Image 1 (spheres, rainbow, N blue to C red):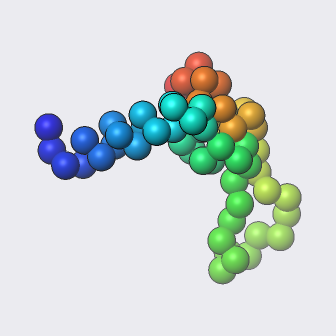
Image 2 (image 1 turned 90 degrees about the vertical axis):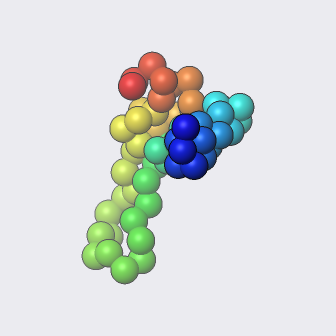
Length: 61
């Protein structure tokens, strides 16, 4: 295994341990950077259906 795959596995293990969605980092929503011209509401995370939970993310994958 290479460095990147080891890093990815350890990263996913941390998210699983904390029960946090890897897509939104447990927030349940996605924010846009201040440099982007989007003035609407933050978007709900599609990976975890807005819950922010790793278990929900696994079920959707």
